[in-house]
Length: 258
Image (tube, rainbow, N blue to C red; front, side):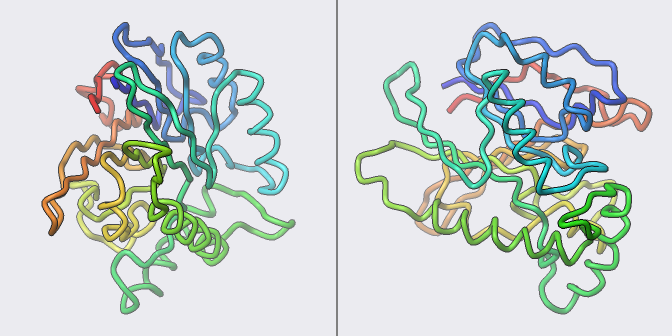
């Protein structure tokens, strides 16, 4: 299967034309496409199936409990498969059944362990103030994000570990937040704020042949080799912001061959 991956397009402020790759079998949107949601209209008549997970900026200035059903309705109207703690099995052109496991997988601020959790939470407070979302009328602040992140993590662990039992042949995980510090943005290193972008989900990686993510405004494509010899490829194809030079060299038509 040939997968085209897009994330962090930020169409609410960036001028960018999305173009389908002629050889792609599937398009994955890994979040932060457009905080106004208007940009999702670009994918209404996409020539191949579209699978998406939301990014943190899809909730900018919104009430959490109202945003989720509204975003889901928008995606259903556009025939975009929005996954949040959900799985979807797609049959590839070669007949393989591929399970796509998707969630925002918010940051739990545990990337550096318990010793740095308090500092990571304090650093994360800045990003949540920028996001300016609420949940139940209260600020969707760093502790609230952590609570949601832990629920996402528990679901991912259960779902990824579920036996295939003949239902699928391989698994692709899709999250907005990164699953490993190996995806940290090299511009900033392993600062406390990095825990707002990366989780320490390395022990979950063996359950997926491919893990797609966004959130960090840089690109990654690396392979993790596990103790049993199995491999997980981790790919981020985030565009980022033109003004910060983050889109330099960006190839929106890169194909990921599974």
